[in-house]
Image (cartoon, rainbow, N blue to C red; front, side):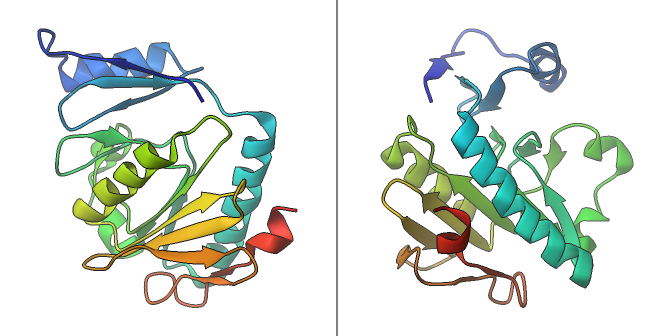
Length: 191
């Protein structure tokens, strides 16, 4: 996807102004990096949207059976400890952590880093930029993150204090101790 980055060295948008910018431009995916630069991304292609729906569907089914937390789609934004506001393609937060967030904060870009995120590489995403984003998730408290690359049929598992692990689509991804019992078989979802 094409990305437009707006440097905001001389413009300091308040959190409210940034939130209103996002609200008024719902057709765009807008994030803010740790330097407060605004990143505008076009919507994904239909194929990527379908794949993302299939993946989040699997997570939702697992979560309904376990009731351990809350699932979020790519429209949910989170304010990270480094002050970036990011929207992963799929995310999950434990019930215990989410319930500590005030109801008012939940209506905005909640001040929390998800426990689990997935970033799905679309046709025009930069793998290098997405890898940096994955590192940002981990640096800000994410416990498990998967970067899924359908074109290369490869996933990358990110965890704190570890180098990323490369996994072929033929292997099953495990939610490990973050999402106990959750497994994702990408070769059955992405044909």
